[in-house]
Length: 289
Picture 1 (cartoon, rainbow, N blue to C red):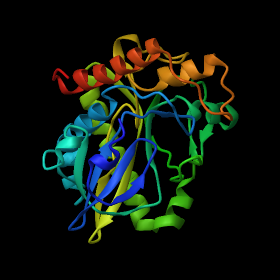
Picture 2 (spheres, rainbow, N blue to C red):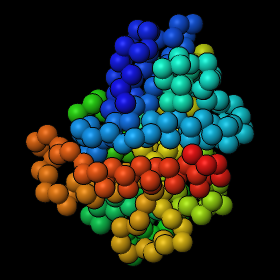
Picture 3 (cartoon, helix red, strand yellow):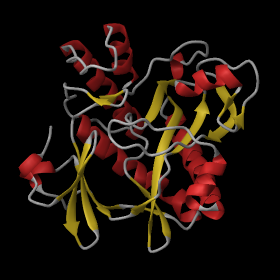
Picture 4 (cartoon, rainbow, N blue to C red):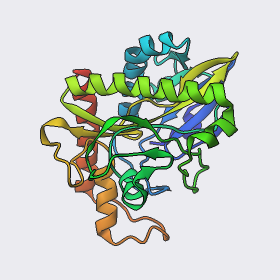
């Protein structure tokens, strides 16, 4: 789904998954499409209902995480998920316009993906030293903050160390970002665990409004997080997941070189991916999709 002219507002930006519109009065309209991205490419095949899942789940998480944000004197950017144009109802959020900070705030409670690759090379993830003997899927002794840059479309997010965060936003703000990111992750992991899901890692984005720190973008969705079924968690291999890892795995097995245009996804991969996104929503919220 790509809303295009159905939204009669000035287009501010078009990302891999979302369109952002100027809604006036320091408000933006964030519209989540059904596009899916992998390996820094937007794939040619959409996943039906994906944008609705991302929006509904983010709205639910903003409510769950509000007490954590309050304890830090922070808030979130959501204004309304109902006061939106009919053409994009269900997949759009009216949010506060923010001055976004130039850091992807990543929290990891388990070793996976690029974190595993770096750990195997160095025993660390950037400047975070980890114990010896960990494997893919291992739970870390405590959640860690492993930030990255915020890349433009077509470019790669680059992992950075904490001193680089300090250089980007200042020492006090950097410490605040690290502590709040880990607090949000811990609360999210607790809620997910109660639903039978392992929250392996996730990323948050923050901005400022009148000097106040504000949680923005999407929150704890299958696009921004790794969700694993707790019942099958077994360190030592890639875990089954409720996120787009299924698509990444298919792309890898397809022989795609990640340089040429990506291939269309087969119908069974599309259906199975939709099923995983919907399952994540239903298990976490306890609400039928």
